[in-house]
Image (cartoon, rainbow, N blue to C red):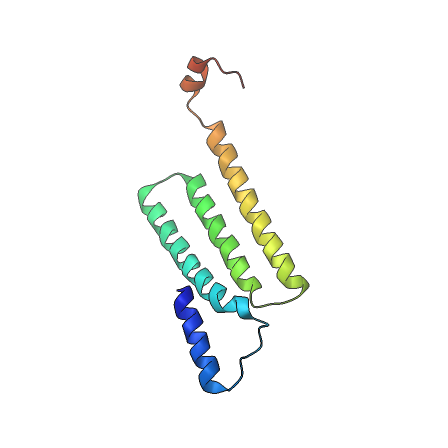
Length: 121
């Protein structure tokens, strides 16, 4: 995908003008497409999760990752302080979701394996 994007950009740059365009949004060439694909894959994984599990915490975890990915994708369209805020909110939201998920997983371990191992929590 990166090679295709680079070749497409180079073709458009060389055909439209004799000089290269500005490099202000060079990151957007690849990251726009990769995050779009990533969001679509996340949604497909969420739909698969709906079919194969009834564990609510796993569905919430996958939904949280989709929201984080969408916030990062939106941040590419803005600049300045809003860009930074969107990225920070996305990272903090993803971190909060995975922390909640891990706490739920840890609290719901089978009690027999903890009691039999002699480990005190």
